[in-house]
Image (cartoon, rainbow, N blue to C red; front, side, top):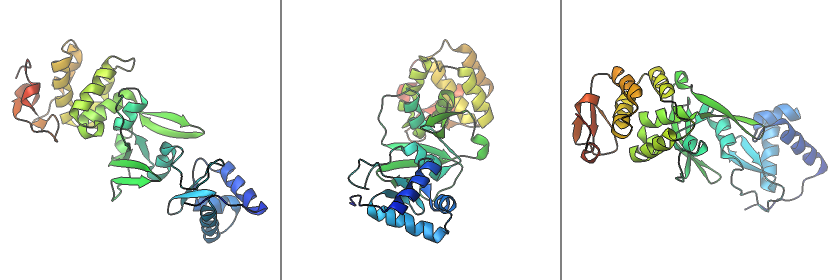
Length: 270
């Protein structure tokens, strides 16, 4: 671990200029532009500062500043959302991470879930002690988002209804269907509840399995939501889906074209 060592007057002025001119992270290209030096010189400068403990390398060509009170450059990311925005943009914070943000779960998830239009080779990446799980989405799926401010940085996060939709669409984005149903329960009790918006988002997403899963869950747990249930039935497509592809499913609910675990169908009509 590097303990920060002294910087000369010129380096201090340069680093201060970079902090003023950047937002949370510093790239070689930004350093080159702000300091009016070549990219090679900017890279060497940042590397030298990293060795001295004044900045910390996140990945090749990208750095974060080290808090002045820190005794080491080996520090966790001050705000992982800002770094995610920088690394994986266009992207949004989604799934369980968005659910945590909106107060839909008290579970603690160790990784941050990022929905990105990029197609990274490694779907699990770690930087400075922070783990990211990446899911690729098409540019047309970048809707239902809210902008949140992290200091002076804007970061996109799925709104509560889009968060629920994404997790019903792909249950593992919420840690599995059991967890997703718990988050849906919290959503149904919250001021965020807007089933018509979820259904509208589902139509825009264009995936029939969403309506099979959502319709089944609503009919099973919230039978009073007749309008939303009928809206889901009107959107059913041919073919059978599974409530959660990661679970053993041994009972077909024909009215929803959905395979579900036997224990979940008690009291539900076929």
